[in-house]
Amino acid sequence: MTDVPGQARSIGIAPEVFIYFALVFDSTTWNMPAAPPTDTNNVDNDIDKLSCTNHIESITKTNTVIDTYRSYTPEFSRETEKQLVRKIDRRLLPLVVIIYLFNYLDRNSITQARLYGLQKDTHVTGAVYQTAISIFSAGYIAMQLPATMLMTKLRPSLYLPGCIITWAIVSGCTGATSSPGGLLAVRFFLGLVEAPFFPGAIYLLSCWYTKRELGVRMALLICGLLLSNCFAGLISAGILSGMDGVGKLAPWRWLFILEGLATIIVGLTAMALLPDYPATTKWLSEDEKVVAQGRLAADAGSEDVLGEEDVKIWGGIAQASKDVRVWLFACLQMATTASISYSHFFPTLIKQIGFKDNTKVLLLTSPPYLFAFIWALSFAIVADKKQNRSVGAGISAVVAMLGSILMITVLHNHWARYAFTFLVCAGTFGVYSTTYTWLSSTIPRPPIKRAAAIGIANSCANTASLFANYFWLDQYQPEFTVSWACTLAFQALAFSSILALCFLLRRGNKEFERLARTVNCNDPDAVARLDDDSQRAVLNGFRYIT
Image 1 (tube, one colour):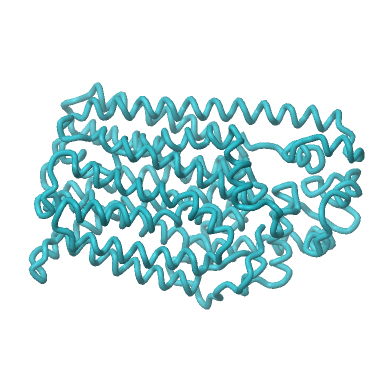
Image 2: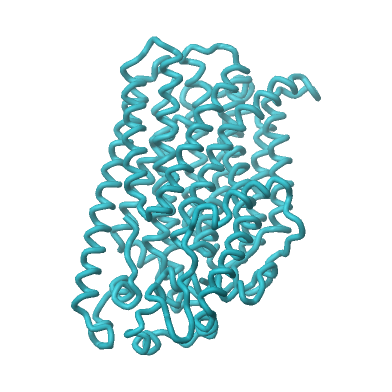
């Protein structure tokens, strides 16, 4: 892992909201494997194969952290790792999830504001509303890759909170718009300043958790989006129904102002609490720092995750761009993002199903997202235990397609159509919560390539928002049959991408097995002829998670 200079912020007593996560994500709760037991005489094969130790030491730099990690007894390593994971789950994970909740809440408030006069007050007509949704993605895409690469060079504890406070101010300014041009400008700049957080959060979590632990944690991060959509209906119902006429402002303007102020508070809190990386975090003991870094090196099958590499930013981008797996993940995420475009219009969709009262509509938007939260988290837990991502993602994709087919064919039963939205939400977000975890574990090193891969995948994903929002034009009301047909097509593309990735990674694992049997790991010339992943497979037993 990249060792970033500077010191992380220390934490006193975590806020009460963190306690739930501290208990739920105790590593012993999910029976997550401890770090490979190691001592000076017995190095587990997840770190080294004993017969290959001399060769590994000849091709990797001497690292005192690894040496210290290997000197620990198995019992000490296991106990220290349990304490470490509890600390990370208590101090890092809840904060990142809460920030992402506000990240999505601020960008999606426009969907609730639409019901309470935003279009009328800003003189937005025709497809301009869809353009206001899409232009956010234009700014988001423009900053995605550079923002992700900057994350590898700057301190997360300062970089991410700075972005949070900036987007909170821009989002609050939406409440001051009075013309289509003003609304479009604010949405574009909101995309620019929100862009760093999501890929930055993925990168940061992957620098703390092993691939066996990352699935549930990443699902929780994605579930911040689902909880945001769930709470958005409840929060908006309260603000929009209770702030009408206060200060002579329309209630939709108060929605942006109050949520912006709340996000500023979150940003200031993050500046005080968000850590950087294990090597520089004050709330870790020295032993915990060693275990935190050593287990990540073991998990990646390489020690270069612990220090600065020779690979520069453009080198990392070039490596990621040449990797077909990165583009398959990008295709999967693009198709999935297109499939969840309905979420930008969900209150309108619920209203067109046949529910007319605006407050009731906002309240009805919450249950499907809550169900999707439970669905995505459950599959993530199973995927982490089984170390398999494709099965859960594939099942979710099939459920999403079934929901869309039913939305197309059943047109006149509004309660049935409302029930089908549960299937669509659970299925699409079940896939969405899988992709970045799968990508991070497939390309664990070098870190600069992993960051570039995340940036590329997220950039491609957000290109979908440039066109998918136009699936939901007013002319397709009230059934939105054409809209759901377009959604179904992209759900099928996502399913195809899952199958392709599963095939490619399983074929790669078979090749790793063949190389492990045929290549003499004590022959430096034979090992040097292999690519990086194959070297790690032969020397350290690395395998892809399918």
